[in-house]
Structure formats: C-alpha cells, structure tokens
Amino acid sequence: MLTKYFFTPQCLLAILLLLSSAAYSQSQCESTPGLHAQSMNGSISRADFETYLEIPFNVLEGTREITVNFSYDRSERTTIDLGLLDSAGFRGWSGGNKNQFVITRNFATSSYNAGPIVGGIWNVLLGVPNIREGQVADYQIEIALKCELFPEDQIASGDRGPDWYVGDLHTHTGHSDGSCDSLLGENIPCPAFLSLEAAAREKLDFISITEHNSVSQNVANLELQNYFDSVLIVPGREVTTFFGHANVFGSTEFIDFRLQADSSKNANFLHDQVDKLDALMSINHPGSPSGEDCMGCGWVLEDTDYNKITAMEIVNVGYVNMPIGKAHIDFWEQKLNEGYKITGIGGSDNHRATRPITQPSAIGNPRTWIFADSLSVASLLEGIRSGKAYVDASGGGVKLLNFTVGEVEMGGELTVADGPIALTLSWQSEQTLKPVVIHQGEEIRLNEEKSADTFYRGELDLSSLTLPGWVRVNLVDENGTIRLLSNPVYLKPEQESE
Image (cartoon, rainbow, N blue to C red):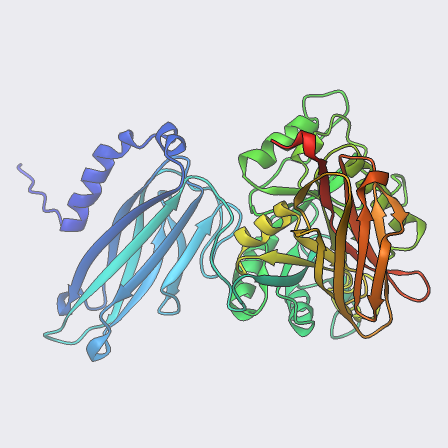
C-alpha cells in the first residue's frame, strides 16, 4: 500500500532545520559569541481560525538566552495568541498578554518557564482565536539567541544621560534571608516587591538584589522591573563562602561558591568564573570577623588576586564610625597602599525591606553614587570600574558636587612634579560638615586653606608626600562621624609617566 505524505510549509522548514542542525555545534556557538538573530514572516487567514500553528526555529547548543519578539496585523479584530514549545515540550503560554518574552536557565518572563536551554528545534506556538472571513493578517517573529550572557546596555526610564546616579548595591529578600512581617504579623521570607517599593520611595536610581548564592531572584526581578520602571535592577548575587563574601554584578548565571581549603576550588577558581562572565566582583564587609556570629563574613580567602577585584564595600550597614566599620575602610586603604586600584562602594546589606530610612541598613542607608554615561547596567558597572563613585553614609543627606586634585577627578591618575597642587571640594548638605583629607590612610593638613559651609580648597604640598600614592576625602559632622567617603585620585611621580 502506497502512503502519501503531505507537508505544510512549516513542516518542510522544520525538516530542513533538522537536517542542518548538526552544523550548529556547541563549539560553533562558543566560537561566535554574542547575538544570533533569526527572523520569520508569515500570514494567517480564515482557514487558520481556531487552530494552532507551530513555527520552528533552531536553537544552537550552548545558547544561554532566547528572546522572542512577535508582532502582527491586528486589523478587523484579528487576534493571535503566543506561546513556546522547546525540544521536549511545553515551555510557556502568554496568549495575547505579551509580544515579547525572555527565556534563560535561571529566569524567564512571567508566563514562561526558566530551565535548561537544550539545542535543537523549538517552536513558537501561535493560536488563532479570531480572524474574520476574507481577512489575511501578516505576522513577524524576531528571535535572538545569546551564546553568552553579558550586562545589557538597555537604558532605563530614569536615564538623564551622563550624570551621577544613586542606588543601593547590597540588599536581600526572601529569596535568601530577607524577612518581614506578613499582614497578620507573622515573620516571613520577604517578597522582593517591598524592596523595590522602598527603593522607589527613596528615589533611588538603581538597586541590586544580592541574594546569598541564589539566582532565583532574577525571576522576580524580570517581572518587577516592568512595574518599577523608575528604578533599574542591577543583576547580582552575594557569593557566600567560608572564607568571605563578595557581590558579583552584571550576571544572572550561577557561580559555584563551594570553595574549600587545600583544593582546586580556590581563589583562582572564583576569579575564573567571574572573568568568564565578564562580571564585576566586589568584596563585601572585608574587615568583619569570621566566626559563629558571622560565619565567613571577613575576607580571608588566600591567594586572592586583588588585580581582579574591582570594588570593595567600605561602608556596610552604615556603622561607619564603629570599630567594625573602620575595619572595612582600613582593609580597603591597605590594598590601596599596596598599589591596587579598587573602587570603594557602600551597601545597606538590608535584610528587612520595611526598615525606616533613619535606621542603618535601611534600603538606601548607606547609598552609592556612581557617575555613568547612562542609567544602564553596563554604564553603571563601567562607572564603578573607573573609580568615579562615592558613598553617602548619611542615608541620603549629602551629595558631592566636585572633588578634584589639579584637574583630575576621582578614579583618575595625576602625574605630578614637586610643588603645590590645588585640591578642591564642594558638596550639598543640610548639616554642617567639614572635609578631612586623607593620604595613604592618614589625615593630612593642606596649605592655603579656604573653606565655606559647602566648599573647600587647599594646596597639596607634594614635596612632603610619598609617591606614588593616593589622596581622597571624607566629610564629617560636628561629632566627627563620617557622612561621606570619596574614592581616591591617584598620584604618580613625573619620572614614572609613560
């Protein structure tokens, strides 16, 4: 008996893709990192009324993220619903609710399931609940495959162009050990919504939800970002080990935190993971003691390559003037003295989103200001890398307007000869503050000082300083409490200039 087979155009496309899929090996995906785009156009008619269409596309082995954009002709009340099938089956259905979605291993747009991305033929699933007689509607599907994940340069709604942006770089929710009271007064794992709500209330430009080793928060973040469009969520997590904690910003990928003494899972093992993700690593609360009160909180990871440490949390929780707070600053300044250029940042380490802003460890107390070209993840991370950042330890009451040595700003390097160099500083504050100039971790006095309530200028006598070195400033209140900490300007002798 002769059997005849009839193939729709979609089936023929699937067969061709299957025959050619062997060419898309993981090695090819890895050898051509970045974005792989596919575009499919088609049309529906009344013959497709109340049917489902499967539109196939090829997913490369090694793909880390899939983005689907869908558009169609909606005239005459035509309606097309949207879903997704992976190579094993159902992956999600958003109906007419969304025209774009994202799938990764660790998070996905609501309506869709996160999970492994297995190479092979996937299908965009279209449902046609309505199209009128005689109507033909065109549709377009744009698919982007990423072979690696990297910080998006998507500019957030609060973008002001090149400017100073403020936010909190260390917070926790119920996806790790953040808690709050339920409506009935029970202590529960706190939903991430309340953290974003607090950030918006404090008019922060950005926040990073940095759970302990977890990446599950990224599912909530993707949904919350659409609602809290005035606050950019910087992807991150707190890599929590027995030998110290570190935030890694700019990646949603899992990082293996299972470091152990006398094993291959050492500092290099951690550095290699961060480097591969092109992410930014910042040591948290480095001066903390490690023990039963705070297991693994102090940074004691042997063989740490501080050339690969971009930033360090110099203000944690806000207890900047207590011994533990000074220990964080001392740890950082010691590394600066050793010649490492590490940007000092702050983080509330908030574990209770409802904490009022007047209390240390409230979201935004302390907060970090970063100069960035735009309000985007990539620009903020570049701002940290450049050293153009400072920490407001007052909970929002102080803003640095200018800090220069000669004509060089924070994070910059000044090549100098003998002689005086002008150091200028200006700020905004509702309280009376005075500047304290610090060189190599020690307070110094400048010559020819001029000051007002929010302005300071002095002459830095380079002949009395050890070079190479660095200079930075603190602003302190009448009680000597540090309210703002700047990053350094680095000083280099003229004979060492390149």
